[in-house]
Figure 1 (cartoon, one colour):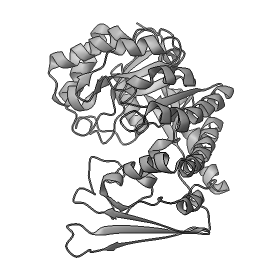
Figure 2 (tube, rainbow, N blue to C red):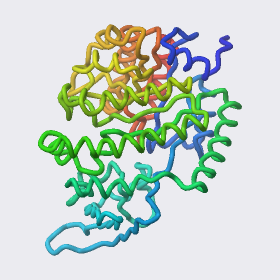
Figure 3 (spheres, rainbow, N blue to C red):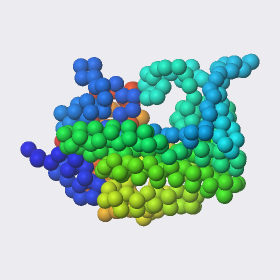
Length: 389
C-alpha cells in the first residue's frame, strides 16, 4: 500500500515528476453528493474523496473590496414590453459613476449555481451570470476605466486580519488531511469579460488598445495584490484564471500582448516565494501551446480534451509541455461524463493517461463536476482510473 499522501502526490505532479500513481481529483461546482454522504463544507468534501482514494485540496480566496468613498445603489425596474425586470447597480466613485444593467431572468435563482442558490436577487459586479443577461456593462469608456480603479481597493486591516485567521484555520485542516492549500483569485481577462462583456472587451482591445491596456493594468494590480496575500497566507499554489483568454476569443498575437506578460509576472512572484502557479484555460489552447510552455507557470489546470465537438491530440500537449508545465485535466465533463457510455469514459481516461502521462499529470474533468453530472459516470471514471493509474 502506498505511503504517499495526497499532498506528496500533487507536489510531485507540480514538479513535473512521477508520483506513486497518477492522481485523480474533482473540481465540484453545484454538484450534489450522494444522499447518504452529504458534505457541509470543503473539509467534509475532501474527507469524502480521500476516503475513496481520490485526491483533493482545500481552497482559499480573497474577497473583493471597494474603496471607502464608493457608494453603491441597487434597485429593479420593470421595462414595458420586456419579459424580465431589470436589475440595476450604480457605483458612485470619486471619478464619477459606473452603472450595470442586468436582466433578472427566470433562472437567476438556481440551486445548481453557487452564488445564485438563494436569497434576494441582486446583481454583483463580477459574475458569470452577467455577460449573457446584461443590457449595460459597467466599463465601456476610458473614463469608466478610471472609475473602476475604485472598485479594486486594498482590503482594510480588519478584512486582512479576518482573511489571515481563516487562512490559518484552513492551513491547520490542510495539514491534518495532508492535502495542498490552493489560492484562487487572480482573474485577468475573465474580469474583463465581467466588466465589459465579450464584444465590448474584444472591440476595446482591437479598436482602443491603449484603453484596454489600462483596464488590464487595473485588473493586474488587483491580481498581484491577491497573489501576495495568498502567498503570505502560506498557500502551496496560486491559480490564475484564464477561461476567457483562449483562441475561442483571442488571436495568438493579442494573447501574447495582453495576457502572457502578466501571467509571467505572477509566475515570477510565486516562484520567488517558493510556490507554484496554476493557470486555467480549458479550451482554445491548441494554437497557443508553444507560447504557454514558455510563460513559466507550473500547472495547466482544467485542460479539456474536447473542443468544438472534437477530441484533441493530447500528445501535442505533452510534446509542448514536457518538463515545463504539468497538466491537471485531460477529461471532459459536459460531453463525456454527462452523455458518454461507460466505454466512452474509460477510453477518455485511457487516452489522457497514454497521451499526457505519467510524469506531471493529474486527471480531472474539465471544467467541473456539476449538479447534472451523473454519479454513475463518476463511479465509472474512478473504477477506470484505479485500473489504469
